[in-house]
Length: 201
Length: 108
Length: 104
Image 1 (cartoon, rainbow over the protein chains, first blue to last red):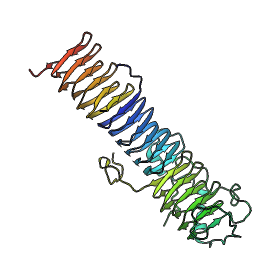
Image 2 (image 1 turned 90 degrees about the vertical axis):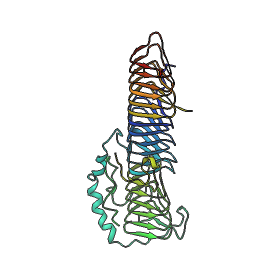
Image 3 (image 1 turned 120 degrees about the horizontal axis):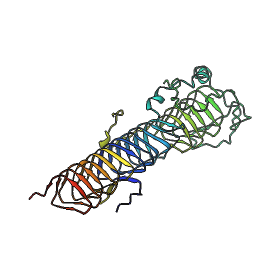
Image 4 (image 1 turned 45 degrees about the vertical axis):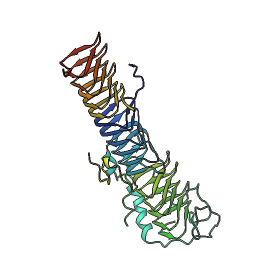
């Protein structure tokens, strides 16, 4: 009876924990937790799991419902059936079709608990180059007529004549990122917020 | 290419696009493609780079290798492990009643 | 019926309410209300009042135990608190300090 080498804590479907759950080892949640969950191992929210708590762990897999931010050191995986309202932060994040989320999602970076607010306010980094280019593009130029419509470009379900936007000139395509040399989109910086200036509609 | 793009068909981007895009059909940014654009389309598949928001009427797939910065709304948004993404995802759904149902903000 | 297991590395501070069996190998501070059996294994620590069905203790419990059934203190158990139960056993090697009420 005594040997507790299992190291997996199981909150069964008939159990409700109201408070803080912390520690080492893995955690499987098939019941309900309100409060806070911090764990050095893997946390799995089963399809019957109801978690009203932020979760910080090494790896988080969600099949159930979570209201709270998820922060993982390694990865977050939302499987079909997952419903999450909260921010997701981890080096790697996967959301299967059918996994539903509402919140800020950010991959990359040392996933370990970054305060939520950091991302919310960090518009800073990427301003310069791209924003300069933007206003010009938006209003002025009429769309360039497609050069010599090279027909054989693969599309998804074509409704009418597919339009292919190559790089203006027929010649170099995908691989060579020809055109304006300084990349419009610099490598994603950690913590940068989704662009603000673009989406004015 | 720069400017505003709109149309009835589907769109495949293999090069560089700047400017808002609104199409009735599907939109794909191929690997190596890059758009700095707000996008409105049916189904959206991102394999390249996107700096801009996506409003899809259908499914959004962000594949491994994609680099996306912007807010994405769609009927369903799938994110492959290995994709880089910074922004909001907003799916329409309700949490179970025990967690607040028609959810509002986080209330902790 | 499934059971809930609080394993050795985990600490729960708060209330645990369950209609399943609960096994404590880790630490629980607060309150434990279980419809069924509660087992506090060797190495487990409960600093909480326990209200439950039968209770088997080989670990440490500091708190009152209100059981609708039997309470068994095994060798190695250390219990400080009052116990209410229909039956009780205190094995050799168990330590206990508190009142026992068997609803006589």
